[in-house]
Image 1 (tube, rainbow, N blue to C red):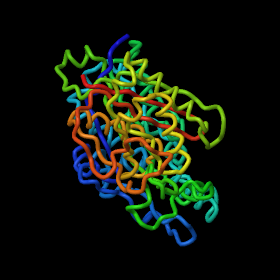
Image 2: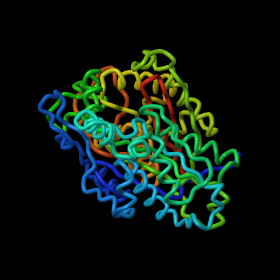
Image 3: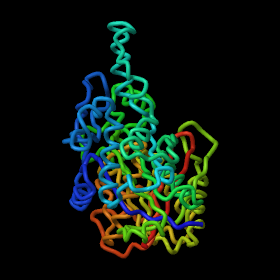
Image 4: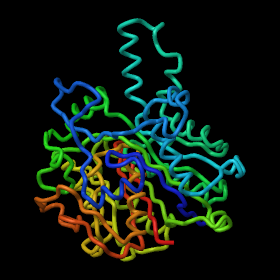
Length: 409
């Protein structure tokens, strides 16, 4: 099997539109949650979201190209351009058919669908934008990235709800491992803080009803009452190790293992004993040739819903045994909300930054311990410590469980 390393990273998030800004604000404990600005919430119980601010697509693409993409695709191209620039790659000099893209979107453009459907209702079908279909489909994030860089190899849009980003990276990892590509731009993206998107999750009673941005996304806290919708993108340059060494690339970390399972049980609820998620963790650790005691840090799915956090805690105990009480755990969603398809990618980048600096951030807002969530969730403040191996968990509606293990190179 080929070895796979990370040589570039790019981020668009509610707390920073570059890796550097994001990490600075992670250290500061900044919470990127505020009042929903995208639409009038007067008829909604939910008032808060985690939205990207100060984003100008023309910083990353021409005005003409930007007009042909909806917001989620703009995010993906922006994060990919950051990642490619960071990697030092000149993709035009690579074999185009050995350069791929694996960037998933869980929802596509709900905003675009809403916008054009409102036109349909108000003015009839003749007023629909002619590029609506290629602007709103979920695969267009990956397609636009491929077109931006001339990547003619495998181009994927894995859609597994909240596990989308992690599965997308995992499948890219497998592709390079098996010698099918040298380079893949991998990650996830979503921008669905829309009237319909928020309404659907509100109807499901999955969202926090808090009106306090600092107490809305509080994973593992006894007072948690739901997740906060967010938006953003995370893209990594995954590269075959020898290819990276030949061009003297800077290597951030090595992807060590990948595990994916399905609960095959319920539309929204995970298996009560956590066995499906636990198996995905076990598979990722075994794939890397490690054991639970080797894992220093878990970036949990940690959505701040009562059920998810309780069952993910059970899953960690099931997978790690006695080591569950020794490993550091946190939830980046405590600061950025739930970025859906982007979540797994942003959280894996967080793991890589933690490995490089030896720092595990706090779970922001966690103050009141839940007796059923009794592990070390990095409460109060971040911790400087050696991080040699970390896993990132993503658990999606439909029972999709995905785990990536990343380790120091």
